[in-house]
Image (cartoon, rainbow, N blue to C red; front, side, top):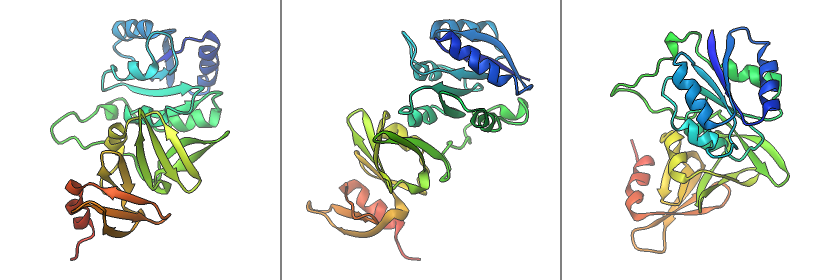
Length: 246
C-alpha cells in the first residue's frame, strides 16, 4: 500500500482526487492538507507517507517550493490547473504532472510509474548515483497560442533563456516555460543536448553545420530549421570534439 497525502487548498479538488483514487486499491489516503504548513505537519507526524499529490498555486508557499523541501524517498505528483510549470516540476524530480480536470486514464498512467514495491523505491544516494535525465520520448505539455499539446523532447531543437523563463523551439512553433536554463540543463542528457552558451542549449542531432562566428574564435551552429546559434568561445572546442573523426 502506498500511504498517500493530498495537498490542495481547494476542498472540492481534494474530494475529486479522492474519488478518482478509489479505483486504485494500492493507494491509501492517510492525510489531507490545504496548505504547505499543514502538509509539513502531516509529513512530520506520518513518516511512512510515500506518495504526495501536490497542487502548485497555493497561498503562502507554492507546491513547487514545498516539493523542493520533500525528503528524497518521497514520490510526488503535481495536480494543477496551470500547464506552464511542467518543466519546473520535472526538474524537481516529480513523478508526473497532471493538469486539472484530471482524466482517470491519465491518473492511472501516472500511478503506473510507481515502483512495484516500496523497497524498490529507495533512491541511490551514494557517490555512484546517476543523474536522472529525462528520456528522449518524454513529453512536455507546452502552450502555443490558445492551444496546448504534448511535445516530445526528441522534437525540441533548442532551449533559450529569456529572463526568468525559457523559450522552447519546436516544429509547432515557440513556447515558453517558467524555468531557468540551468534547471532545464540538469534534466537533459548531455548525449542529446549541448549547452552552446549561457543563454542556449541545442539538440546535437539538430545541428547541420558549423561556421565561423563574428567574434574571433567563436562559432555559429546552424540548425535544421535554419536557426543560427552563437557558440561561446569556451564551448567551441567541446562542440568540435562532438563531431570529431574516428
